[in-house]
Image (cartoon, rainbow, N blue to C red; front, side, top):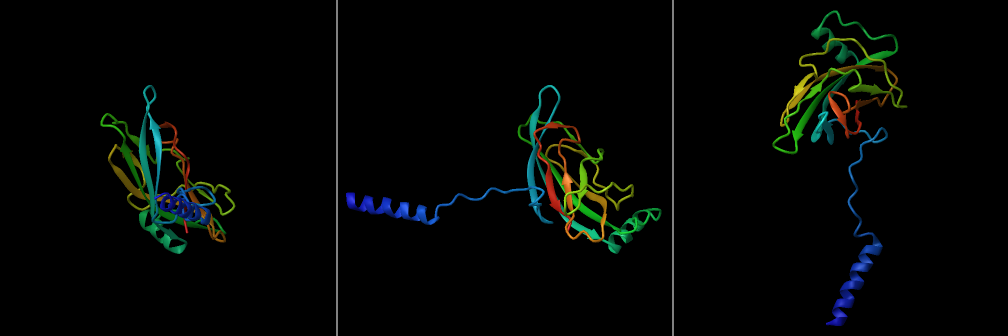
Length: 189
């Protein structure tokens, strides 16, 4: 009996030494590892000024449209939308934002789309692009999200035509959040 146990322990140790028992890698989302289009990225926000509660969020970039196709959609939304500056082109991103309370008493809402810092585009070298004042196709990514609810809509950016890998950033500390949210990064390509 002791020899069987010794063989079992030796086998487990051999597997561990060979790398067979490696822990699963944690999902990482950063400026150098942005989420791909279609990936649902989870985080949290803290809402409330006196008694704050943690709410779970999930953000998904559903699709992107770039270049002439993006300009065509912007002009369909409002024919007065200007053409991008020379050397620049538009990118549209359709995004889904979900909010979930952790307790039945979690009833605070999140105001999405009111802050200019919520959705920002960065170049491949992480330089922030200037915001563009255009009217996006319906529905825009703006509104009040209640716990258990979601909102889906469009945001627009102007990026350099030569930038092959622009990134979109979502800052959850806007929209009424008071902390704990981490900045999320998404591919726009």
